[in-house]
Length: 123
Image 1 (cartoon, rainbow, N blue to C red):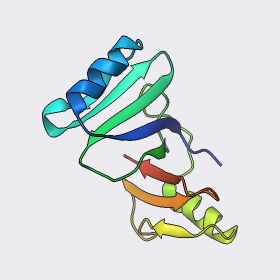
Image 2 (image 1 turned 180 degrees about the vertical axis):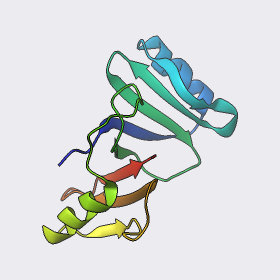
Image 3 (image 1 turned 90 degrees about the horizontal axis):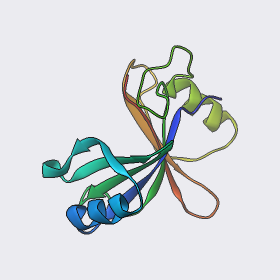
Image 4 (image 1 turned 60 degrees about the vertical axis):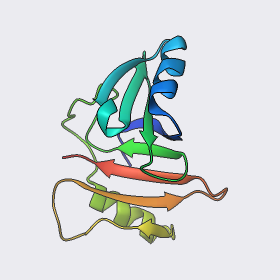
């Protein structure tokens, strides 16, 4: 099962303060748009997303089809296949990707401790 690039998506109260804080830890803006209140920050291979007002809690995030530089990779497991495998293993879906669609899609699940996991395919 290839889940793709991994990051932590943080629900922040003030995107500018959070950006400054993580810059002090050696992160730099890698993507996103601060005027839309979301940024992707990177320090070496570590990626965090900062999101103000977009969701309520922090999430683990996987991006099938991408590497840690947000570059397309040739070989990956499509999100619909990941979803089918997880459902077959008894994993409960909080939200689901349309299994008859192609391209970008997402689903969410929770781990046994209540941590939300977003699997978000961009291509």
